[in-house]
Length: 92
Image (cartoon, rainbow, N blue to C red; front, side):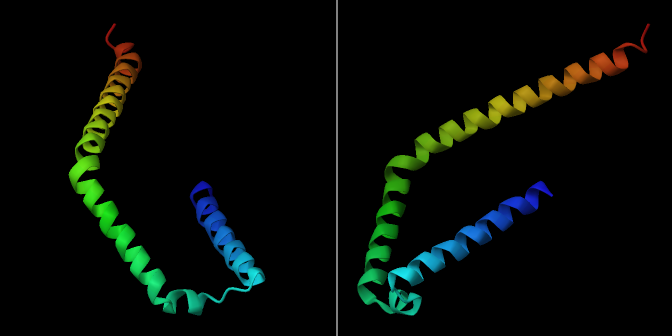
């Protein structure tokens, strides 16, 4: 049930955004046909890719590796402790 709540919330937010855009008087077809808007998004995406490749990728990957190591180490320690507590009582 919890997984479906996120999907339903996103769907409701999407519907509300479309309603708000419609109330403002903007047509979605006009937005997607606008060449200037397409060019602006292409420019922004190229800029983001350049920034990712040249500045952001290395530090973000280091932080991600650190988080994975931390979570993996914590998870393995937790499993080890649970294993010892659960099956350690049968060793006596």
